[in-house]
Length: 250
Image (cartoon, rainbow, N blue to C red; front, side, top):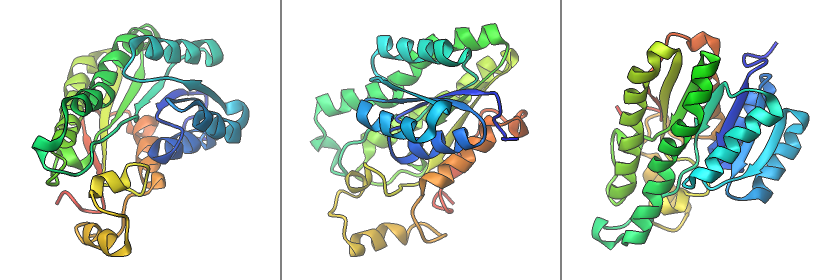
């Protein structure tokens, strides 16, 4: 029997990258998964591969009505919301901090930080009623050991990391666990933006050399951490910043 047998999970940004890896492993481990993504085609592709264990829905995590619809869909389709993974995120291109325009800054904080506010408003009352719940926020090593050129993105992920701890303290008495998973950069849709350079073997090698285990983060790495932290094996773990980083933050 899977580690998440009988659980219902929402994964945002699940149409690709880390989110897809988490959604797939959750389904393999027995969970029913709401695959939410701003790109409906991508969500449909992932959910289609998972069959009856998954349901795809389009949603912009910076819009409260979309978040409400995602949470409602989980209850309508599967009857509960046991786990939420706030994974959807965007970044600005690696560049001097003063070169990032205000619209990019606002959009990034809306997607990376305000989305968690919206999700908490929508899902915490549901989890309170159930008497349990797990919230996983995908933070970043950027919020622990920032790289230059990503100042505003680093700040957004620092907010996610600290917010996760604060939520854990406040919601702990209600048996709602909250943890942050902090991956190092991976070869996902945002990879080239993180580097701020063309994706060449030479440029990859430069960034890879900063990771002691010598490779970039993979969706399977983040999924494994997300599986453990959502499972009953982690029932006494809340409020951690969980680096999945090959030693980058040391």
